[in-house]
Length: 260
Length: 347
Image (tube, rainbow over all chains, first blue to last red; front, side, top):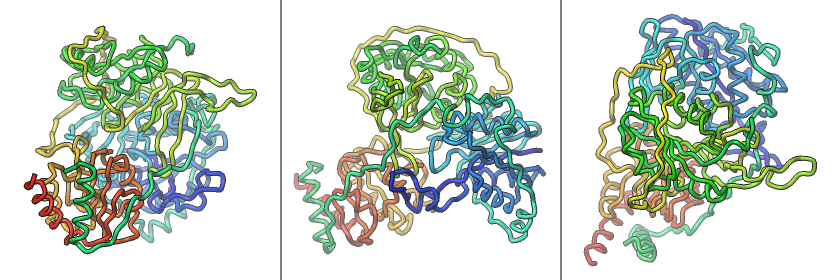
């Protein structure tokens, strides 16, 4: 079985976000990590590899620096890494990004494609389903459990108040939730091996069946009109009182606001 | 693509088990505002099996017209038949704007359909309005009017961006539940109902549903609660949530929690408030033992009154709280419950 896992290098928003003086995001000053949902997708692929045997190829699109997450994935156990990088791909929205990644994947053989549900920088959850549409294969989003059954996958697909057990013929694309599993750590041997392996680097010319008009900033239907720091409502009162006084304070506020 | 051909504001009227989801009514409320600004009307797109009877319900919440695609293939949500139906509705009727709920269904359907009809999609919008793109005229560049301007948070709620889709139609956006307001239903309102069936040809993309497993829950949806008593890791243990439940019971409220609590396995995911949980805007939000990570704040900062109790005076939750109490929740919360009980009994 051949599995392609799409991963993204993202700024770690948990540690807060840093800005350049002009208000744009200072990506250089922030820690870059493998997107958590993608890491869960990779772990799911590696578990399928452990159980059924599989060749796992990780694909990322980004700046040359994104090679770091490919090395990390290979140190965890992925077999091959492909970096899709080219200046003309910059500024892509989800349409142009999914078009690019689909163009890269068309060069590969695959039974299963796994992506994270969403990246913590954009939070859109759109790229996975859009890749599946470009490749004309079924998609199962929000996977919480993945099993192989002959030439099909059986997946528990999460909804707000239920899950569906869904069976799809491969090839198929699955988007993984970070709750899916606890990703393994890199091993020292794995790290050593990862740096012995070649990373494949592809540019615009390597993308298959993709029109220039669908790539990068120019090929993005959505355009940013304005971006700014979030203006928050600001702090109200803060008091330090003993427990009884604290209680009276809260009760008074609830009365003033007609809650009680 | 002749952009002028595309008219009207459309809403994907999500239904589950043949019951319209609340998000559909919320989107209709917003669609009405947008349609007014554009001098056009509001159309709900209702997909399902045996769902035609739900059209009046959509009319009561603001739909002028309802397009119904009624087919057995649409009985339970599956990506492909739904994407096919919605994409064919778009191809035939050419809407200017399509709004979809950012639900577990909408966040799967929206991207698949937008890719199929080759247009942009903006996720999880918090503000939708009609305006110009670019916002200010730029010499040498055409300024387009009557564009859908879609504002959304990004980078874990640290930034907000306003996005337009000036050269493709329809302009598509997803919106989270709880963000837009539904209108007061107009009893007896009727919409023009139009039935349409694009034909369904099952192939590999029509996945098979082997089982539907519903979560057993008897709790109120936290998005509907007027008062939320929300606990974080600071509550200390799953057992200690009892003091929060007691407080909620006195006020007729509901208990919710932060992501840390769900990750620790203390509470189920459907009680989680925040970026990866639910967006809530109750009248009163108690944040108890919640530090206030930005991802949590993104899901609750629109609450009318925020009351925070935390022993760490530097906890970021105090930056958004209307009333912040630095102190020990174990000492304060039980006393607060008793005091409120007495107050309410005295009335």
